[in-house]
Each structure stands twice: as C-alpha cells, then as structure tokens.
Image 1 (cartoon, rainbow, N blue to C red):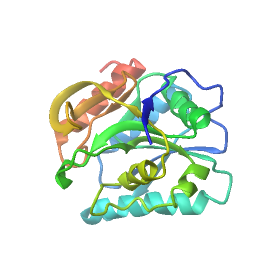
Image 2 (spheres, helix red, strand yellow; image 1 turned 90 degrees about the vertical axis):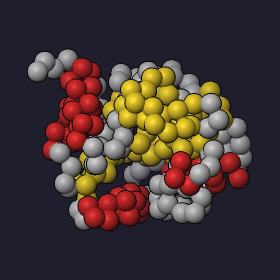
Image 3 (cartoon, one colour; image 1 turned 120 degrees about the vertical axis):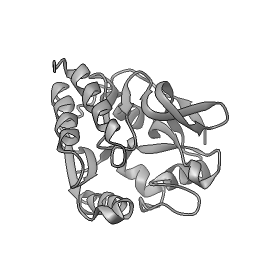
Length: 230
C-alpha cells in the first residue's frame, strides 16, 4: 500500500452516469438549511446527488452507519459501479473535484478521498473519511465488503483504509489546505477541525449535529460557492 498523490485532473467519465452513485446520509433533526444548501451546491455544479435521511438521532452514529450499509446492500447488485460518499455538511468547491475523485478511482483502482483521523481512538492512523470518499464496487468487494460500522481500530468506514493497507491497495489522499478552527491532529504533522478545506476543493464543516454555529458556517460557505447574497 502507498499513499499516492491525488490527481486533481478532471476525469472524462461522466459523474452523472447511472452507475455512479453520489450520496449523503443525514439525521432527520438536522437544520433543514444544511440539506437544502448542500443540494443547491451540487445543483450549481450540475452534479446528480442523492440525500438519504435517517431517524433516531439518539443513536445517530449507528443508524448513520447502518444506513450506508443498507444503501450499498440495496444497490450493489444493480447498476452501481462507483460510490462517492459525502457527509451532509461537506460540499465540492468547484465543478472538477467530484470528477477528479472518480478519475482517481477509475484510473488507479484506488481508494480516494479526504484525510481524517480518529483521535478518540488515540492513534496516528490517517484514513479516507466518508465525508468525502470514492471507490469502485469491485474494489469494495476485493476489500471484503466491510461494514461502515466503527470498531476497535477505527471510526466510520476507517476499516476500508485498514484493509487497503493490508492488501497493498493504493490510497489517494486529499490533505487539508485551510482550517478555520484547528482542533484535531492529523498524522504526525498536520491538523484538521471545524471548517476544513481539502485540496482547495472540498469543504467540510464537521460537528453540524452538535454545534449551531457550524450550521451558519456551512450555509455561508454554500452561499459563497453558489454566489447567493443574504
């Protein structure tokens, strides 16, 4: 396994092809503006994107993970060949990054996405976070079709990165280029936190469910991207 340089060149492959599924899973108690403005950003870039709403916020993390697993299970034997997962509080900042995510997967048969770390597990393991992740279904199956559930060595879908490392599969990581409020360590020499921009191309606010100020940060960033005035 190797972390390879993420290729930001736009892929020729059409991200709106029916075999490319781009999804965001979110809880039903989230501020409606969050889903609304994420949808506006994807529309702004003419990218088809599906938002999957879940309930039972008290058990949100397990329900969120189960909902990702359920979506994959429902579609894996249909037309889905590529899967891109974005958190509800994550958006593309330009028209090329979603095609570039797909391009890395298509051209390099790798796991691709933004860098994250599970600091509550107290390790320095950098992994591709499902707030901005792309992979092919054949690769998912090669990695053993793991559940999205967290375990004793990782958070949501961190197991994909662990398995990729063990099976010598390349990983194309997008590193932070700007952080509004750096909170968490990332590897040995980087940080991420609230309002993290990755590769000047993906914005993830984090903690949208628990911190009201993050809703305003997210909506303001979406308005900036689509050129909407208050």
